[in-house]
Length: 466
Image 1 (spheres, one colour):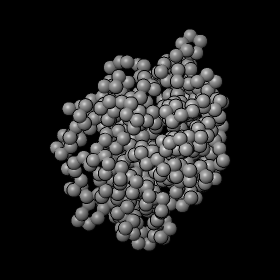
Image 2 (image 1 turned 90 degrees about the vertical axis):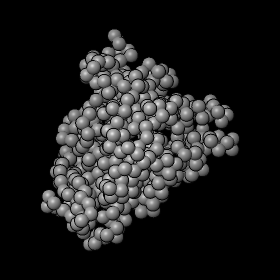
Image 3 (image 1 turned 60 degrees about the horizontal axis):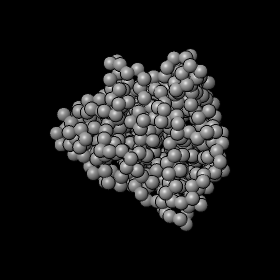
Image 4 (image 1 turned 60 degrees about the vertical axis):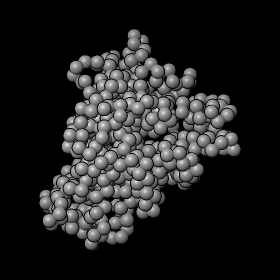
């Protein structure tokens, strides 16, 4: 049965202090026809005291963030990370190119040409939507502090989810923009003129939130499917964060805990199952919520007939695959292979419209093998053999022979190559990898959006855009 979506809009308020525009959760039915979240229908206007007096309504406030993230349309409100990171950061990383090359989409062309401007509306959407979600998450955390009538179990679960999601938003904001304002409450007057917080402090807050989330979330998912975070979801982002911040032992430990947990099997599943809604590899998924739609990737990347793709894999990306790599066979599509063999597009997601068969796979087990591999390799010769074993897990699934790399430099190069072909056109992995390994110049940071600069005179522009 298709998911049944019922949008419930409400307003948080606190007498004499603040009004929070928060959309309470969409009631979602899973494919098994079991409700994603059972909620009572609240009145249109709700105070935050009312929202946080029952497990159902408080859960709705948290789930509404996931719904909003999936309901925001690319090109309108933006989609924050899903298709936006896959396509736009994919163009920044020279994985994709925008083939239309016309005046109808100049903002796309800026990404494709790697010549961004502060007035680019898609750059603005990353910033605006990220902070929109952070505001709502802060509202949830504040509401939970004074909640009455809720069970401690649900209060703890929701507190863990909100902290994880706030870290998730800041992870992408700090990677895209560098220093960003660190907003940890809903006080508008306090936050409207905040300066940019040094990136190091933002990373510290991300780690704090994820450690707290791990202590609050359980190994078991709170839903039948992997649609709301569990303990290992927080651990997955923490492992990535440790990798990005050079904490090799911590990164190895976090990734190892997920791999050894047994929750996600003893190995990697077949390539053609990775992006299905029943994916055994998925650590955390987001469910598309728009009627008769699967993922935006499926809708936008896939090409029917022999027309040229709007989002085309670059020659450099196509040539990155080794001979015999089954990922190229399974995850790359060709719209006109005989006449135009370079007209290639990402085909990880196979469905655009119709019955819901695919969810966004936000975190998956393959990344944890590669995080553990890189973290081990960075610790020196003693762990190189183990690093290669992790690397070969992915190579084996792709139909490739074990790596021939035999020293630290060669192993790290092989890991970077593996990440490139495993995560192409997927949540901006390649762009963020290039940035964190200093393979891009000062323009590796996106510009602070012009509307934000004009609204807050305390913000300073990134150096490359002054």
